[in-house]
Amino acid sequence: MNTFQYEVVKINGDYADLKRIDSESDETKLVARALLPPEIKEGTRLLYEMMQYEIME
Image 1 (cartoon, rainbow, N blue to C red):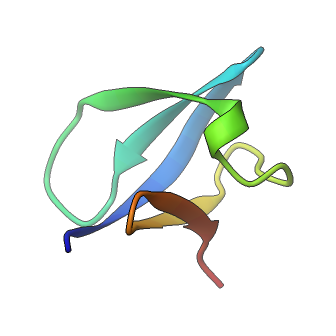
Image 2: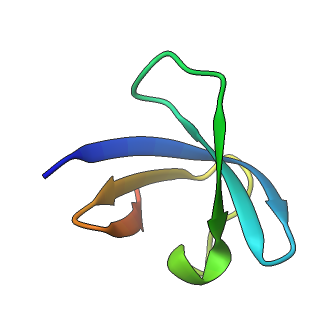
């Protein structure tokens, strides 16, 4: 399984823009907030693994 690390760059209503922080890329990924932990805010770091997002400590 692939594992990716993201940072929440911007929250816009029901969606959040995520940026990969484990590789060199300036692209963002638009993800529905329903798929993300409810307590996220801008700057939160997330781990994506096994088709789930969780907050990195």
